[in-house]
Amino acid sequence: METIRTQVGIIGAGPAGLTLALLLEKQGIQSVIIENRSREYVENRVRAGLLEYNTVEVFDNLGAAERLHQEGLVHHGCYISYNGKSQHIDFAKHTQKEVTIYGQQEVVKDLIKACSERGIDILFEAEATQIEGCESENPVIHFTYKGENLSIACDFVGGCDGFHGLGRKTLPKESYNEFKIEYPFSWLGILAHAVPSYEELIYAYHSNGFALASLRSEKISRLYLQVDNDDSVANWSDEKIWDELENRLGIQLNRGEIFEKSITPMRSFMIDNMQYGRLFLAGDAAHIVPPTGAKGLNLAVADVSALANGLIQFYQSSEQTLLDNYSRKCVARVWRVQDFSNFMTYLCHKQSDEGSFESLLQKSKFDYLTISEAYQKTIAENYVGFPFDTFN
Ligand code: FAS
Ligand code: PHB
Image 1 (tube, rainbow, N blue to C red):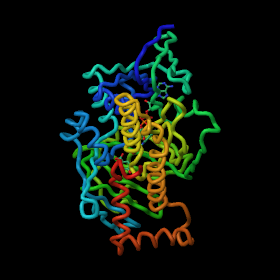
Image 2: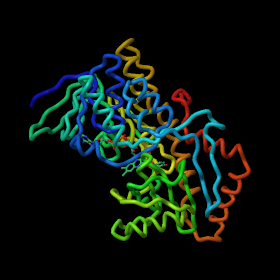
Image 3: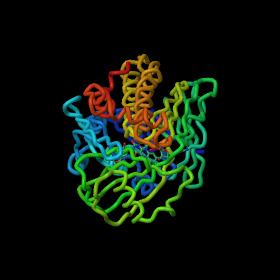
């Protein structure tokens, strides 16, 4: 079996793994990434679309944000509406921060390009099969690649392999507590060649269900509808989607060819320990949030920023205080993001019959939102994200 030797072995070429490798390379720390999908697959996987200012700053500092600034759309607010009545949430007024709309697949393309330009090895269609020796100073990642069994001998392992990956499964069950909510609804998401007829994102509660109006550019709309968990894309013709979006959003939409349709289940998931010896989990490997708060990708970048700081401290000063505190620091931020994502999900989705106590409590939240700047500021500061040093 051929063995590759590096300082940090990284499993997963998603936003977490790619950003980690680039943060380490900037400080002269070597890594190798193994990714079980093809480059084409990961570069075209449609997912998130909204970047916090923190995330943009990380990509700026990595020199990997040129196209992001050319093509990304900076937003200074959003709308939250209830049965057609809208409230603006002014990020600039309440936080002096902004967010940027830029598709995750574009982020991944930019990061992979930066990795290849800087000589960071990414082995695509390479599947990690086992991580051993986590409690030693020489962990080993075993993986298959082009029909061969290979391994990576390293000092540390970045478990950036997402919700279904190997990383979390390698932690001893007794080393963490698991928390989860499976929401009784999903999102039907579309991408369409249609000029967005709204300036900022609209999160809309309607008696038929939630809808979100987002975008990818001045010519591509990104929109979502709350659907039942057992619903199917086959039940939704283009016309039915456009009609229901207009109904729930309360606005007229420019229509166009829908070129991507998919249904994503909604869940909150996390574990309260993100490290095991020299294995460190980051991103979806350790937590999943419902996309209502637009946090998944941003949380992944926050995790690897903390992990990179710990690894840099170790290699530069043989100190490990940051690594020892990695999980506690990340989990504190994850709880904040879990709460906000859960709050936004319950605020905007239909979960009970109109006129029920629960639905009237939901309405009271919207009514409060329209009269309280404090409530609007609460949503704004969580939405744009907190500085990385907030949760120490
Ligand atoms: P990722 O899942 O992106 O990357 C993990 C990588 O590891 C994958 O490429 C996988 O192929 C690889 N891998 C797994 N096991 C492996 C193994 N054994 N060996 C080698 N490689 C392995 N977030 C938002 O903010 N807004 C959204 O609208 C939104 N929509 C989403 C829609 C869907 C369908 C999904 C699944 C997620 C969505 N998310 C959204 C969340 C998403 O953006 C994640 O938060 C983000 O991809 C997290 O990045 P990573 O942690 O890098 O995990
Ligand atoms: C998106 O544009 O894909 C998007 C934006 C905001 C969200 C979720 C998804 O909360």
